[in-house]
Image (cartoon, rainbow, N blue to C red):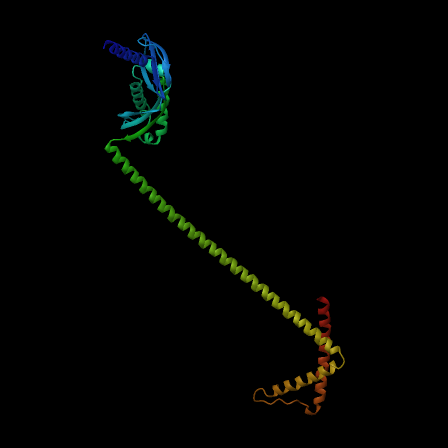
Length: 318
């Protein structure tokens, strides 16, 4: 019975020794190994061999990106306004040895340093700027933390402000200011709209007046051109008529036709003259009617020669 017990004891001892000798480090982890109380090595992911009872794993670090919630705190702005600020910090262990020996508690150190840096940055800004300069605040906190955390083997990746909460009185005042600004913008927009409307109406009336005057001007030009064209057409027609009459008179038998026409018009005119009023006009020598017609024809001949000469001059001028 003693042999199996001794064998069992030896098996347990072997298992304990194997567990002490063989260390399996998970992925994205780093273990700090001390030998006789001093730093010896950093175990990377995978299987590692250590000396039992001489080496020991003193610290275990996670190499993943770690989010850290920064507790809410009261900050005072440049214009002496209190703000309640909280945020989230993202960091990553880059040097396990420094993270183990550079600070007794690097998480607490990062948290405290982020709070003090945040108070310092916000103290340089006025209340309105704190809401506008979130990126500047985040960048300032990250820069200050990253410089200090390099001695702790930690890389600060980013800092994000979760909320900025001013006192209730300030919130009411800000809401009233926003309402007043919106009402002011609405009034300005309405006045600008009315101004633009008046400008558009004036511009429209001006354009209409210009178009009307241009139309009247063009109408007057067209009317004058039409009248000039009509006068020119009448003059050309008269010139052609006179030329045709002159040509007809110069033709054979033309003078006889003119004499006959003049005689007819003379007799007609004399008859009409005799019918005017209550008095009957009678020629002094009724028997000598042929001599009166001959005298009229003489006048017509002279007039016809003048008209013929005038038509020829007109034709040459054209």
